Amino acid sequence: MSGEKRLHKRTDGQLFAAAAAAVARGDDLDDTLADLLGLAAEHLGAAAGAAYIVDPDHDELELAMTLGVSDEASAAAASIAQLSESHDPLADVNRSRHPLEVDDAAHVEILRGSATALLLPLVVRREGIEISLGLMALGFGGPLPSHEILIGAEPISDLAAVAIERALALSLGSERAEWFDRIAHTDPLTGLANRRTLDRMLELEVARAGRQGFPLSIAIVEVDGFAEVQKVGGNAAADNALRRVAQVMAESVRLMDTVARFGNDQFILVAPGPDGRIVAERLVRGVAGLPAIDGKKVSVSAGIAGFPLEGRTPEELLAVAQKALEQARAAGGDRVAAQAAAD
Image (cartoon, rainbow, N blue to C red; front, side):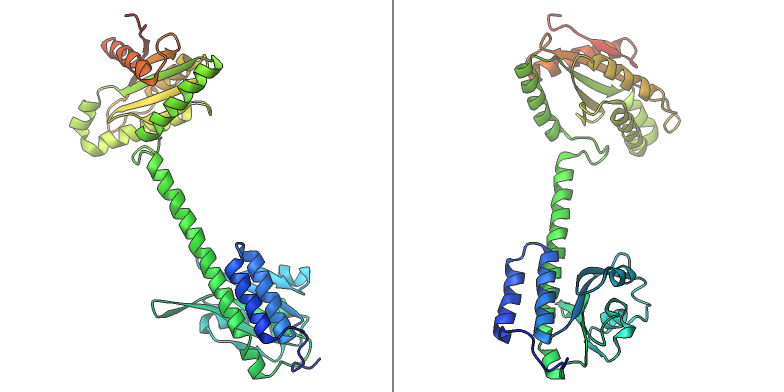
């Protein structure tokens, strides 16, 4: 097959318009790369092709899309490891950021069935610096097309680079959004739910218990002698104690339960169902079993209140649980106490 012969019926303008549309309208990177790879092959008359994306964290080129490539070849060339040091032609193009015309495609593993190949880097410019995001490899059954025709494929590779950069930006934005959402709902010291999340959860659980006529327990948990821990060991020791207590709480509760940081040295347990007292006592025992933290034994006291007998709103339940907590502390701590609403 002559490389000069065009196999497509569309004009170059139509092809490039289709490529631009694939990037502008595509919302899936795999689909966009498949479209662009197909259009590049159509433009050049290539029989096979592949698109790779750089994985900078692992210094690799990862195979993202193929066209007319056997499963065996895809498996053999699924990645190019140690990209910064490899002498593979794909690695060379990625480092140089310049197209490479290959007269013997046997040197290109992914195009082992082709006679010749064209390797196009997928490059973007950021703050004046060129960055290679991957490459497009195209294989031909005969001689390479003319240099002028090969150069005509570069706008398609540029669009592929734009598509990859956009996908990476969207992925990073999603990760950042998840991170911001996490820190918005999590106490940074203990990793438990924060007060904002707790308030919302209390409203939801109390409303659900009311609708379903199901019991619900709320417990306020406080670290015994926390002021002394902070006085003797300083803020570092106090923070360490809070983190260890929070870890035990998270490991002691059921999947249906919620534990949250309520105040400086206080936590909240929200336990749906009739077994809230059992869960609270298991939590207290778990903390008591901790080894000494910075030379001091740590324990907690808990005051518990139950819906609906001891309160029908979050505020009523918390007030009753607070009274019960005062009883637990007065009795020496390291225990769970309950306080009837009528007391």
